[in-house]
Length: 334
Image 1: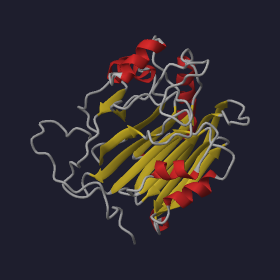
Image 2: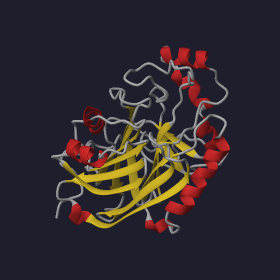
Image 3: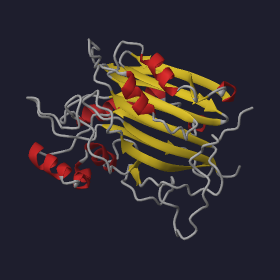
């Protein structure tokens, strides 16, 4: 049977012994945090003393109804230092995206499972010949509105539940309602999706990951000052105005979850084919609409280290930039 760790695992360096608290990047109770979301700084090197048991690359991308094979190759990347690859798509076109993704992921990985709700899609890839490690896999979906249409603006979520070598995980890819004023509606949609797609018994999941176009915007901010801050690489000033983090602080959403630091530029809205923000008649205010959040159910059993949380700026085929996270898990008492 194939072992859990990929031979190219991101882990393997010794623990940083000079930290008085848990190392930066680990999922720890005393991480710097908002009331609802622990904000975690990603680390390049691994704090575990041995290789991780499981390394996961997680990607979310709103495709704006278009696809090119070149974009998908850039999305997956050439360095495959992960075991599982999770790709969540929103506004995916009606073309055969899964076949293109499978081609882009080979020869190192193969499709283990997928879930679809029209334009909202989720794909899970594992190393070649890793099907024997899958003890359970279930795909589910939940709609909260939207009509689909030519570009596919369906709103809702899809989920994959998987037991992979005795680690029970739930991945939820979602697309929530747009526009800055619809904060309460997005909060309500998240609660409905969670009630529908998350197992009610917490012991049935070790790791829960939400990814997608959550559509939270920058609160009470006008276009010119926002763009000026981004242009001068001062986008960190805007983090305190991020609606998702504000709602988490109020205790409305994502209690107990973690997210990497928002060190990258807002991922929406770009002119398609470029790295320039929207110059259409709408002139959207840039925002971190595309996010990845995770939660370890019992940190006494499993530790998690975040190795990267960033946008993929070299993908130009949409008005959104993709976001990726590299997450490594380790059994504490194995």
